[in-house]
Image (cartoon, rainbow, N blue to C red; front, side, top):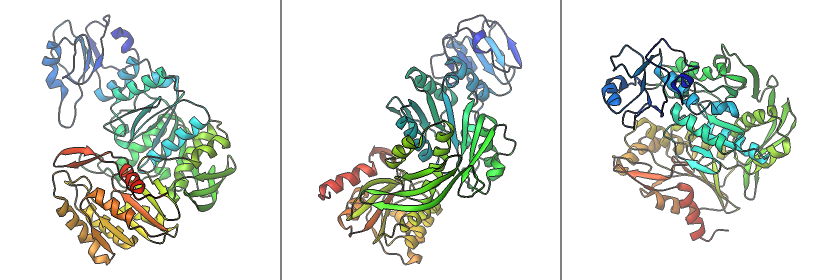
Length: 488
């Protein structure tokens, strides 16, 4: 691609050198092949790529994007910009020929519910016969292929590469989770979202390397509603008005209040045989019953967010009903087994708040006993261990304390920390450090009507011990034990 064409929509402060040259690629990692490429100097928190310019030029870079004055040979074109991360996003979009302009684009932001809501919407659109690409916490899914991603919202170049693959695969819709970090670091710049969705917000991702405070966290989430044509927000969240402050989009709301454009009424728990979920009647901009194959009040809100978008896209209630009645999201309140004997669920809950919320939800289904299998990650804040122990001790009839990803810590030390929160509750528990054995015990000792929640790892398909990762997926282990025990 000609450099002149590549920078056509870029806001620049200065250009030094010729734009009449072919560019072989857009690069921001100095370790890659830079011959004939446009190299972008990102000033990161730990590394400033400007310091690598001599090596990059020696490798044959044809042009560079910088944020400050630099000395380079005359044959290297210099493009100075105010924000190199923003430039990377815009140049990546141009390099892949603006793929999001060729699809209907939907971005979801919020503290919780993004993953489940995106998968619900994907299922609905596919039930209506549409081709869909998705990017989020569980990776990217394009034409049935799954790609592992390092972040909920990958770097802008990788994002645009995925979008290009979606277009090549014939996708009509792109759905993605939009993290606050992705918004703050301009990873989603260069995307004009057709729809932006806000699920909810609570204090999270606040710290030296993330957000300075809750106000900045909200402000970053709110950026999405200056980047989309239509916004759909959870009216029941107490901070929804702060999120949409300064919005430039047409706005719709969803919730359990009559003021919402999409309202859930007559909410009811559903449990019959292998089905365990929640139902409600939709009122407002559309009216029909909704049944979701994932239990819990949060499933009402996740479904509302997905259904609201689907209705605005003109998708009929039949496709919505078929999709949500059979929806499964890896590691998110994932129903592994259900019968009159017991119910087994896998979930990603890995802190005190999410553990309490999950167990409270399962209590609503009146189990004979509520059994929870959990551990905590090593080399992480020990307060999470106390809080999970306390939540399990108060909420479960039996806690089976085991390993998670111990990393470089001893499992026994982590379990001791969990006891600090668990012991004062006087809740019943046993320790089984081997996670496979803990899952086996929970299922082999199940009593009729028990609900067993295996939590903490969710969709993760590995266990990390002493820096070594080995394959381990809670769902697979639970299914293996169920088969071994001869459960029907």
